[in-house]
Image (cartoon, rainbow, N blue to C red; front, side, top):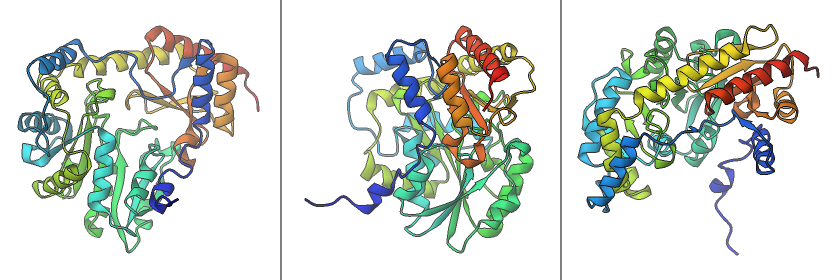
Amino acid sequence: MPLPSNRIGQISESDLEGWEVYIEALRLKREGKDVIMTSIGEHDFDPPDETIEACKNALDNGHHNYTDIPGKPDLREAMARVSSMALGVETKPSEVVAMPGGQSCLYAAMQATLDPDDHIIVLGPHYVTYPGTIRAAGASFTVVDTYSEDDFQPRANLIEAAIQDNTKAILINTPNNPTCAIYTRETLEAIADVCVRHDLWVISDEVYWSLTNGKHISPMAIDGMRDRTLALLSMSKSHGLTGWRVGWIASTEAMSYNFAQHNLVSNYGMCDFISKAAEDALNGDFGLEMIADTYRSRGQIFLDALGDTNDIRVLNEAGSMYFMIDVRAKASDSKQFAFELLKNELVAVMPGESFGPSAAGHIRISLGESEERLKQAATRLRRFASSYTE
């Protein structure tokens, strides 16, 4: 029989390192064990009632057809308004293109900036789909690590040292998943200097912008970066719509034309009734403040329950819907630490190795459980850490 392409077989490779803990947690949960799932970034609540009603109304009112390839005009206008707020840069509807979710935006950004045999720099630790998305464009990448000792703020000199003759772009994620780091203006200005001098794109994953209590800064707002930044945004985390698949790219009018061409041959536009409901949710800010307040409150409850301990250290407390926790004082192998935590206390976390070697010795906690469950998780983690030995 015919063989599949080499490209499709190389997309994932070994990018699921460390996810065995999550898989085991799911198995235990299916067996009826009371596992507290603080592993993946999924809300434990439904979308806002207003958004659900907007979707029902859209269905009742005939929104069942093909939509404009770059997104319906009213949806793009709503996305532009939120982009201006999120990015700190005035954004026009002609400068945004709607896509089905943040992952589609990421894929489109790679296709639009990278040719086969081009090179991109990725800051690590990084989200698990980044490498495969780059490979799907036929490009190569170098991971430039950030470090716990720097609160996972990137070092511009290390980025510059990784540049090759065929480097076209830098992929950043702020607020960062998994480290929760919010890149400072100083950090972004240093990255911008490198990008301008070497004429590079910045692909900026900013899907957690709304969960930072106003501390987020987009690289697009830095001098010299307006026309070389592709900002990836999504309603999954900010508006509680993970399963609805609504995202967009904010860039320039010229790049938006290219992204519309990508839509033409990939998804052929958005779902009509989802588009209408998303428009209403963006214009009404449905869930925006409530979700941010929920995770802020949950984070404080978790920290209070965890208490002060010399054994483990919570990093970047204001970063998103996660905490990155340094467990190196207790464990040289955070994957083993996570497995034992699951086995002994039925708390599922993501080991740092899931996101790259620079996160080794850390675990990531998701706040996607109720306040009471997070309080229990913190209590169990504190108890486990106090007695754990390798």
